[in-house]
Image 1: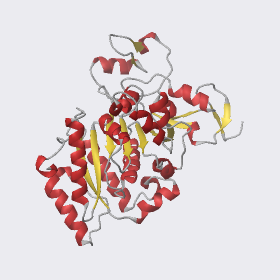
Image 2: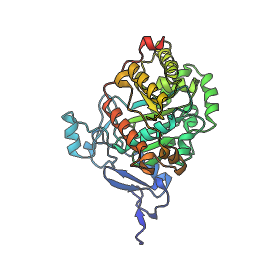
Image 3: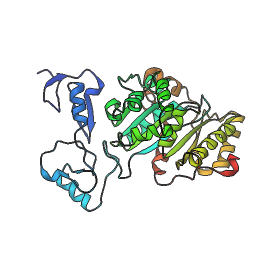
Image 4: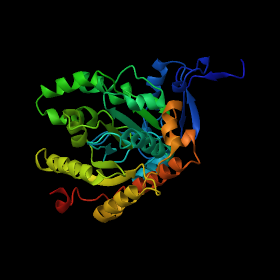
Amino acid sequence: MGSDQSTCTVCEREFSVQFRYQVREESGRFVYFCSQVCQQRGLRRPVCTVCGTGFELEFPYQCQVGDGEPTYFCTTSCREAARAGVFRIGKAGGRAAEGPRRIAVFNHKGGTGKTTTAVNLAAGLADKGMNVLLVDADGQGNVGASLGIQGEKTLYHVLVQGLRAEDCAVPVRNNLDVLTSNELLAAAELYLAERPNRDRIMRERLGDRASGYDVIVLDCAPALSLMNQNALVYADSVLIPVSCDYLSLIGVRQVLRTLKSVRTLLKHEVKLLGVLPTFFDVRNNIAREALGALTDHFGDRCLPPIRVNTRLREAPSARKTIFEYAPTSHGALDYSALVDRIVRLRGDVAPLVDEALVG
């Protein structure tokens, strides 16, 4: 056997790694899949409820069935930890008892850095050890283009055909899967328009089909569409990227009015995670004034700004995240700070809106 040979974790066949999906890290060790069939079998292995490790069932104690869903333990230590109420949420494959955190990256206005923010936020959270699903809810498919992937199955197949998100998502990095979109998403929107509870189809489809993740990040299109309404009803919090220009505060008011409608008309209590100033140039008076206005209105919910950075514009052409393309750049440092802040805001999310600002 040559030195480039690997052994499939599922079927134990020897093969040469040629594609990214064929190798995956789980709890500090690498697992290998000789084919997509074995990959899917491997991804459906039980996941330890305590530490999030995927494993093969061998002993009766490893699965316990009570009144709710089965719980799984890879070792006796994890079983004892569960009895003591200790859960190490955040490992690859783990999920919080209350389900995955769902963050929509949304703004009506185009050109505010939504896709850049969604991609790098998801990648940064995955680097923190969380199992992340990045959902492209924009039919332009910019998430897939930014990472150099094209899923065989897309968000369309989840919404219209009811396929599992895990079966359609493409593993692209350690702990990071992407559910891509393309022009078929327009057909999915027509499907939604004809359905009862048309604003809640995404929540119905993804709610019980994406339970293996700690965080789900949704990249929304720059529009007030039925697809975005579905994304906002599915999300538990919203991150609003705002470019630092003259019209920034006006755009935020429009977004907040939309979120207020989601709360009052669609009866979904979505929260404001934060407002993210983007394209900030300290040399520019308008940028400084925009940042000051956002800080005055939102206080600590105005997140640290993302500075203008050439590397951020170049990274998608290299099919990389900013952390891979230029890890020491201002862009990487700023998005790293954003990820740290989002992690700290886990249990401290602001009320939806300031009524004076919305009015």
